[in-house]
Length: 116
Length: 115
Image (tube, rainbow over all chains, first blue to last red; front, side, top):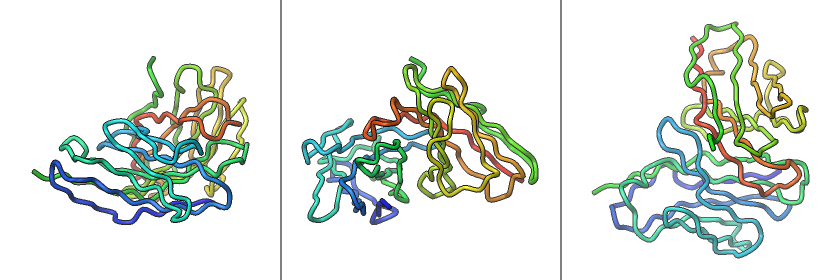
């Protein structure tokens, strides 16, 4: 079974500083990996996804993530934080090759706080 | 394009009652999945519908049931509500259940409070 672990339930950065949100995955088959963002009282919005093409994936709002098989990681980064980035971020995985559906398994989330 | 729409947005029910939540998928999507997100947690997969049949199910009791209609819209039903069923219920739609890397679009969710 596949799973993801997000290290750090709360991360605080200063505006303009680097954002680094950590995600490690466990999957018995090559995974598809996703990062979603959730603003208060809203649904989830896809930031980016890894689907076995390029290992460095660029997403919306200046975010990117790098798939590292040797480290089983898919950390999310943004060079310069903006106040509008304050939200909850979820890493998610689908086991590749299942052919049976798009069941997402989510991590527990990381709340990002951006301070002036 | 209206995206994924869910109704109602908020709901308060009493323990033991039954509730029905509704979801209309994004235009062109044929697969609907339901997730439960408890406060402070990540979403948990409940089940997925494609071609009006339940295709996958997560670790949820039979009190949770669903339906998909010919127009691809879906309902989530929960019977004999428990306090622990209080959560944000999210609907996600995607295209072609067999393609495992297609993007899932989420609705705004229905906030269910059981008292």
